[in-house]
Length: 197
Image (tube, rainbow, N blue to C red; front, side, top):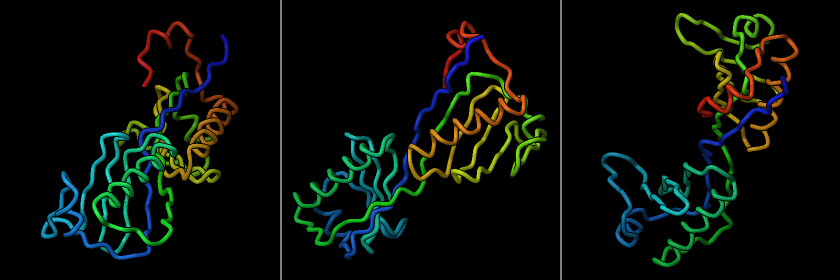
């Protein structure tokens, strides 16, 4: 049986942006169409872009939280569109914005079944309570991410700060699970017949 490479899909990148200036959310809500702003309900303004498909929570402190990007370049492109939208409607950003990725959430398929009992026995920093949750939770030290690993070989990766960290985490756990004998391979015919992620 040939070795099959794990498949990885970035689901969401969450980033914070600091503008180093205060913003008049009322003025932004009045001048930019299709934003949601109800200060009685939520202290921030919700701005949604269609292309790229992102959501920005904008706060009067000049901080933003941007979610929905599937790639870092998509995040940057979306933020630049928000700045252009601000300028177009007379909202001037004076300082140099600082963007920081807080969390990259991804899914992966190891293309092999995982014996979670073996994984729980030999991996460090795991929580495995099959009566309460069908997956194994593994806190990885390098990179610092949390993996939810299921017996099907599907995984959720959270806590990464970059797409590279996601790839490193999946490659590392794949090698480690193979080393401890926790992987049971699936033939390529089964993989093509199975719906991948």
